[in-house]
Amino acid sequence: MQERQTGRERRRAQEFETFVGGAAGRLLHTATLLTAEPMRPPGANPRAQRLLTASLARTYARWERLRGEDPYDRTRRELASRFSREVWRHHRPRGGLLEVLTPLERLVLVLRLYEGVAEEQTAALLGMPVERVRAVCNRSVATMRGTRRPTARRGLPGRPGVVR
Image (cartoon, rainbow, N blue to C red; front, side, top):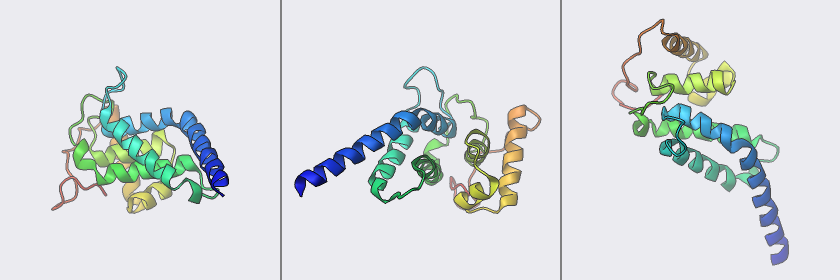
């Protein structure tokens, strides 16, 4: 019995290592864009690394229960949810590509344009109407193109730092 369990745990760990080997680079890039940290030099993004590590740990803990669910999608959802909950830690961008955007704008822009998540899925993940996701995405793109001034960094009224 113990040999069978050890073999199953070894196989689970090997499957997860294979997944991480293929997906970690892109997921780290996503986390770095969200936290608005610089991508170079290597190691310049400790917040993104912590965010990704926590998300991967959650995916690993649920690995056996995924049952056909895409582990990349699961980890990306965990990453977005975790970022949304911990946005107060990421309120001071440090020279990243998307530092001019608010946390909500970064989250929507990264999910929609970098990750290619549909508006409806993004809205469901963030608990927002589709129209709001569309408006935030359009505003973010306009800001990045330089056709619009960046907005003040704030969360929900009365709840500083909460992204929705």
